[in-house]
Length: 143
Image (tube, rainbow, N blue to C red; front, side, top):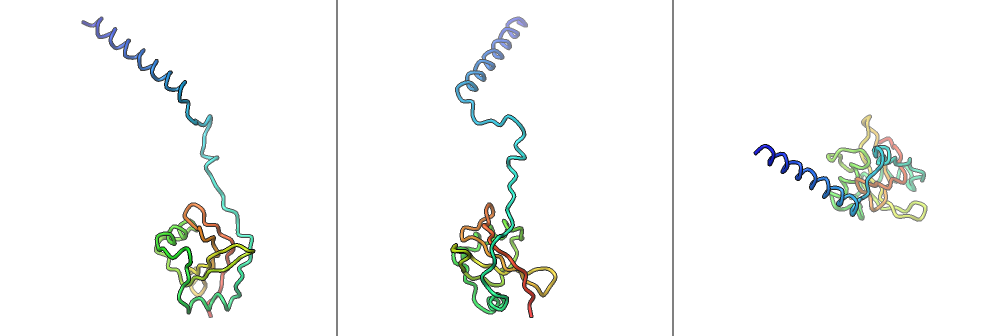
């Protein structure tokens, strides 16, 4: 009985090795040859454009109804803010669509620390948690 069990176990092991080898030869897949952690790191470059609004124009947005444009959907806006490093509970104080260097953008005003300052962020209309498309930013003091 032990010999039969040993033969059955050995045969099962050989069959598993054969099936695995055939699967790897036929469908090798895209397997990395080394650690992938460095390949997966992305660094967002700093904004290079200048915000096309003056300080008074930015502060004026605080008194107007926000014009979110493509970021009207609250879930999409939260994803955009998360991509920028802000918590989901961050309140947008104002918004307006603008054009920066011939490209459409949305300016979002968010509170800054210390109190009394706000940050104006110009992002691409396709802003998401994966790619914010940050084009410009500036800090403005509230009067």
